[in-house]
Length: 160
Image 1: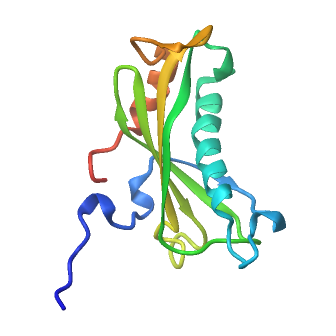
Image 2 (image 1 turned 180 degrees about the vertical axis):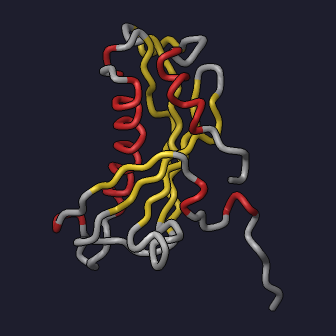
Image 3 (image 1 turned 90 degrees about the vertical axis):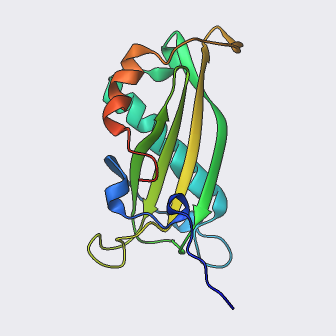
């Protein structure tokens, strides 16, 4: 049977694919009945990685900006199991910084960065679309300047 190589954008990423980092603590309750991290926890970590970075890097309460990012899409690719009691390193990169939307990639790593934790256990894709904070049904024409300024350094080349 012939073998195929995954497209570069489908390969298991390593730590060099991300531009900024934070660490999350795992809890006993994060594991499911099978002893590995529950799927819902991955999405919680992805969301937290993006919004905590925006909050910390802008120095402002992003919920109070005139334009806010709402989640238009979120997904996760799984490569290896994770679970309690080891911490999780969350790498963040911006795949696309558009006019009024942002596509993030969040790598979830567990283990020694120079050993078993060199490759991502999972990678999330997270899309924010910016809308008017007083009328979320109304899209806006631009990502707020304060947000754009902290995201520009996180932009990576396609396939990276």
